[in-house]
Image (cartoon, rainbow, N blue to C red; front, side):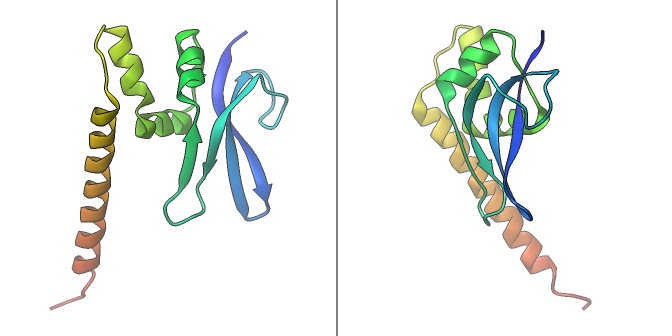
Length: 123
């Protein structure tokens, strides 16, 4: 039996939202899951997500494999960095994770402002 951490779809038609779940890999997408770890809502302008970090770390340490989308959410939340540092004996403070998240936000706003200024047209 292989355990995966993946998304299950919820929400109305044309308004998707997702739960982050732990599930047996042989189950269907919206089948019965083992545990719910959080949610992911891609629709708002700034997409929203919430992950139970302790349980996510617990499941990954026991061999659960995250899907590509879930892995990117974990990366944004700083969970993968915590796991890496725990594995190699380094400690991570919450301040370091907040700094990394602030840097990523600054990079995203810079990219958006550059794209808006470049869209002027032919000179």
